[in-house]
Image 1 (cartoon, rainbow, N blue to C red):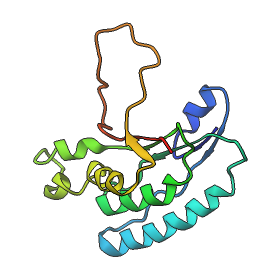
Image 2 (image 1 turned 90 degrees about the horizontal axis):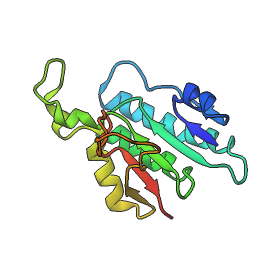
Image 3 (image 1 turned 90 degrees about the vertical axis):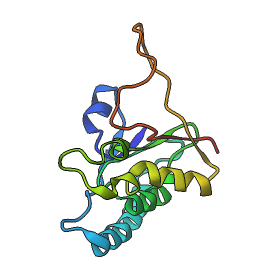
Length: 157
């Protein structure tokens, strides 16, 4: 299994696989930084593609910049690398629920990973929003307690 993102420890504990951990964004901010990061993201996706062995399962975790346009560009760049049945996960969708809390930004209501996911899904029928089932759960919790609500996209085609 090849995991794209910062899951080195999880893959190591899970019994194998490789992690391609692309660089996480740029300092600063604003449109210029987003455009530069998006261009690099496309180039990094091409580099990651070269690491994928035939028949290998690929999962992608996006957890660098959380601006809508940046996450949308990452979904488009890395989505084609995800193998059918596997996932691309965009972290920190909880941002949309935190507007007005200390150290948040007013634009988080619309400028967040969930907004990017919604737009991505409208234009890409290969994916559906679907959380993986619990691998093991003897408790009463039926929904995940997570910072990543609606962040799981399973590739169906």
